[in-house]
Length: 489
Image (cartoon, rainbow, N blue to C red):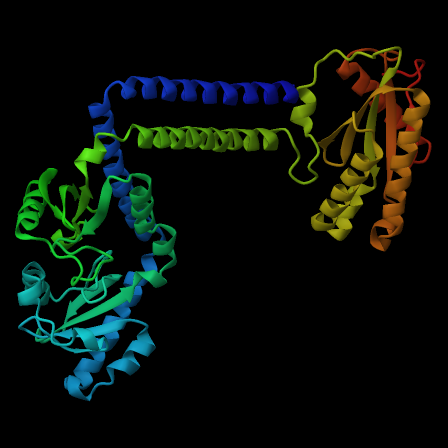
């Protein structure tokens, strides 16, 4: 029955793969005749891929990295405590603080100018001149006195992506700003959307560049000296930020005509407008209309994704199915698997099918005297002995507790007796090596019935093997017995 399930599962997986692949092929042929629609679809998917990557990162940060914001708040409170003790920042050792906290510290005065910092290059930075939007938000945050932290933003001098936090001093004269380099963050590195951007640029030659712009129009990952919006680009950017609708303009990119596309991204960290982003895609529209070959690559990727998804799905289904029919402790098939056997049993080519019921003598004493952990060790070892002592075409089950059932196919009575003796001998050898178990008198008794001699129904064969087991135990335990037709079942 398990074999049938496996075949069914494989068949379903193959069917899903073929069906999914067929759908993808039909879609590809259809889209090949509709270049314009196909190109628009690609562009939308590129946009969605980037947005999904950013969103995945933000969700990962939200779920997996709750400690960074908490640490930043605690560090800010430490600095505010120092400020209460000594409000003269000129006397502070900011480099020492940086090494202690692992974060850069910035002191922003009431004019929104950085007056002191552990990051020397930013001292003197005037937010009113470079970043008017941020300056207004800093004024609001100064008034509230609450702690704020952003998911990610840009360090202007280097373009590095960092996490920033802000909190005003109690007298509202300054804002304590901290920055944490996300390049040192495992979550950021695991879900780094810049890798996705580079892959997309490599995959689609008509894309010149892709940038993620913060609410001030600065490109994350790029120093401000290398990328600043022109007036025309700024206008389209602001329009997208305000309307939340995609905008396109034609402009110049390194001496070539290019199309600039701006897509709004509404961050899940929506405390205020600082978290909203704009995705900027700069591409060559002429090459864009001749990208069927690139779509072919995307088609291959789709097929690989489909196959990967189906394989993951099949594993997700197969694993619970395996556990449902196997004993977790010993790894043998369990009683459910045994119950799924066909009721009728057939002996092939004049040979017999043997039912062996194996029971551990005095096993209860092992659990009572030595504990269940030792009992589990004994059961696992016995299961391994049974597995090693039976032919490859045999079936072994842990029927329950210390009972095991073995079904030997296409076998003679003599061969069955050898298997039974081998199992008993190996279990005795194991017991001899374990003094505590040996002292309890643990051994194995085996009852045997045969098809067709004793019937061809698994329940009847089980009952007769059970009768034989009783006879084996009456003989003194640690022995085997074969059901005789004159015995009552």
